[in-house]
Length: 514
Image (cartoon, rainbow, N blue to C red):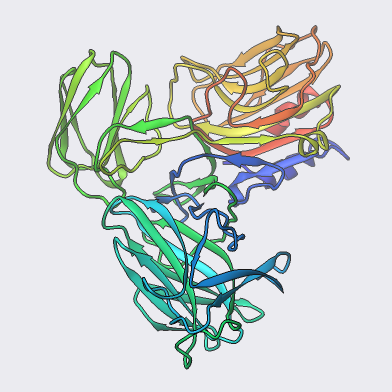
């Protein structure tokens, strides 16, 4: 796939001074700060090592507001606002102070600050927090109660004093990031605790303590140390998914998908072999997928035999349309990471435990001055380099769009339904001004849409679509990345997006996308 370097090299062929006012490179695994990204559930991706794992996530609430009583509860201690800079050197930290004569620690009758989260059986979690010694020189972290795991850290020596699955990393200016790892042994409430301790003194004096900041709880698979810290406020953080090819380890870019649910139970990412199950289905398209060399025989509402092709990363997928009723999935042999989803194509794996799980859609938008600072209303050129994860889709997929958040004012680069063609459309005042496509055997797509009043042109992989010699430009207020008004989510990867604040010539469009 092609990223920012491709746009820059192509710019040399577009003529002096012809550079994009917006250039987004999703292959770098960094999301531009002007993009507002959201997804309200956790989701999986393939990371740079080729392993199927969770996207970046932080499931504690108010991770930088440790004195907030709506999320954090102190026992026999208090958390006070501090003027000491946090490790990011831009925000203040907090001071944890055990009460006088109270035994310091995170046990049931000791000093502690805690928050409870909903854990899933079989999922591993890393709980981390930044801490700095003051009068006291240690911190203790605890998971409880399924399982109960704790560790103590020296904030002067930078070492793990006791506990397993623990790590401590210097964070500068005397700060350390302390962390513990545990795997949930049941589904339900899991409590996270931290407390000041001291290597000599056993009970608090009511005035002394330690500094703390930046708590994080993240679901992980093979990881043993915390990943990049992500702030939360009133809700959990579920980050963008920068995906990689599990075989070549090549970066694929930003993964954008629609909402889907895994209807099979106990299909967790730990790889436990799937059991035979029955699922209620309706008369619509479903896709079943799994890893392994075993077989799933579908009976009841459908009669099919699906045999696996091998271990991860060889994923077997099969799309079918059952009759309404109960679908019995009979399993023989090794069948792991299995998924049954309503839809005509497969999406990324959704781990489940004792109940079905829904992965919500990915949203990425640019609004306000984050949009208007680079966009030209009168003329311009939109460019998107992208792919989709399926050959044929039932509805058009959005790659890069601008709109006023309605279907009446919009311009879009999209993949058409029922074929593999790339299309560009313009709608102003609810009326189509331009709608043309380029026949393409398959992706990846290097598509562009150039616009000005009575002058529109789409292009894909160097092939020009029919020109538009009439029509007006819509008035828009935002950019939509990987989706668009009236469109389905991309269900694929964006490697690069660019925007030029002028209507590039047809020759330039071909040079840019060839």
